[in-house]
Length: 186
Image (cartoon, rainbow, N blue to C red; front, side):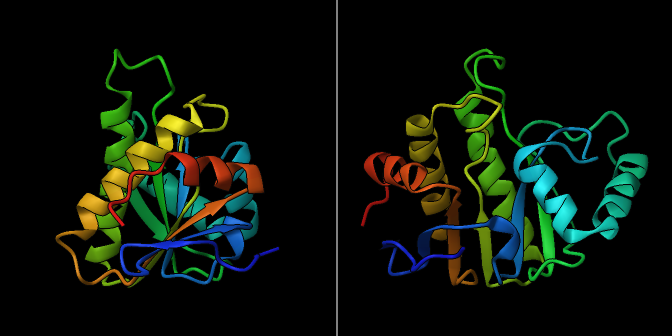
């Protein structure tokens, strides 16, 4: 299902594709998780199904030891990739649109920043993101494109380790909306 990569940004360090996040052969894929970290629908459910029980086991341990009340919005944690092509899964909780008193953009930006930080801490050179919060969490795709592109560009401006940040969209239309509204400087 992975199609020919779409346009690239920031000297080729950011690539956009339409495809299945669970099949991306990168250092880490990002899971648009819910705060329980115990799986769910959409991207979250697909990653847990494809990656197998090792991911859930590590998520349960994170809940037990670090986040007994659940992972806060905007934060990120890392687990094994289990049976996925990616070595790791970075779980981040995006904001539910309209429920954070105007802090949605800040929290969504934190999702990208904190996920990229974890990838660098693991010495990874590639990472793939889904469109965080744009599904059942209701974040408008147009606004999310702007936040995501600005957060990624800001991070990459001071990091040379990450060679590829891949943005993986589920459908052609999702990619088109992103391309219409992204704010990369080049």
